[in-house]
Amino acid sequence: MRNSRLWAGLLGIESAVLENIEYDEDEGLLVAHVRPSRSARGRCGRCGRRCRGYDQGQGRRRWRSLDLGVIRAVLEADAPRVSCPEHGVVVAAVPWARHDAGHTRAFDDQVAWLAVACSKTAVTELMRIAWRTVGAIITRVSADIDARVDRLAGLHRIGIDEISYKRGYRFLTVVVDHDSRRLIWAAPGRDKATLESFFDLLGEDRCAQITHVSADAADWIAAVVARRCPTAVRCADAFHVVAWATRALDDVRRAAWNDARRQARSEPRRNRGKQPRGSPPRPWNERAVALKNARYALWKNPDALTADQAHRLAWIAKTDPRLHRAYLLKEGLRHVFAVKGEAGKEAEAPQV
Ligand SMILES: [Zn+2]
Image: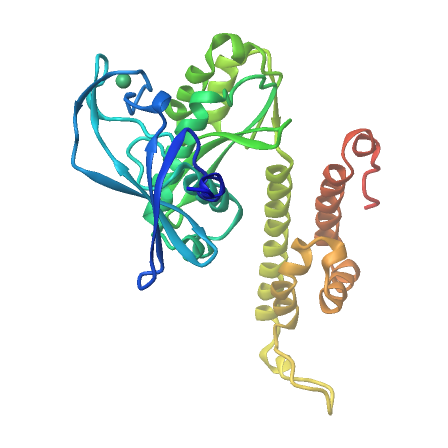
């Protein structure tokens, strides 16, 4: 075939011989008949070792390839079996696809990339595959990468955290590398045993190279880190520290709100309805309602406040010094992490 190299390029096949191209116009399907090149033939599908042939397997097989423009494309080839001294009778390896895969390597790689960069719907609709298939592909691709790349090499500063899924019923323990800003490990569960399995994988030598470990204040993390990386500096991560301060601020707000309600209740009933002529009706426990509504104004970063929220804050500053002080302390703490480093250390305490 004159254009066989162009076709091989379009289909992303290497170490293979293109025998024939068929185009089924009704189906909009292009079928490329291929076979592994001589050097790639007769190898174990699992270890790639050259093996003795066993039989012809179950006839021709197809592998979905990347679409060519708007046309779907598949590769078709024989799938003979070989007899591997280590893995027994297995389907022979093909250079264009991973073992046991129904898609070509190029297809797998594109799906795995998309799964990281796009939404679930975008991946499944663009590639015309089920979400379950995406899961199987990611598993294949990551196993392939794990065999070539050591994700745990050269770790110095790591972060450990837990995230929930299934609406907060299940948890994953995740480990990130602060230097490369990448996720390096994750496993179901949030307990000592789960985290221990990460450090087991890391091994003693590499544990000794860890200099900093950030985490929330969970006891199960602290205990394991103290034992496995005794020399590492343990730090609380900024996100959790600010979250604690925000929670403490909300405790103060709730206390102020309860005070206001109690006070409103103790006021004589006849005074409650008294309002200046012509003004819109106001609730008898106005102050309590205002404090309840000030929640978001207190939580938000000052530069993201709406005019109404800024107004609420100004009102708190004027009428409730205790709550306002709590607010300034929270903001002061947030500022330390926002400016970071030396500037953070030198940041002045808020004027309260
Ligand atoms: Zn083998």
